[in-house]
Length: 68
Ligand SMILES: [Zn+2]
Image (cartoon, rainbow, N blue to C red):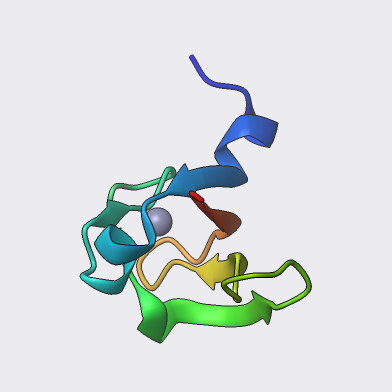
């Protein structure tokens, strides 16, 4: 069983995320750009490198880190 902290930060492929192929770690709902609440632009060269996402089904918030 995963700890709650680990589920709050997932590393994903940006392309998969853009195509709604990434599942919410809490309920399995597919999430994508429409559910981003905050983008993190601070790390070059390809911003955003991460985003905060709020799941439309279970309303959990978690960090999505894009794989380099
Ligand atoms: Zn969810």
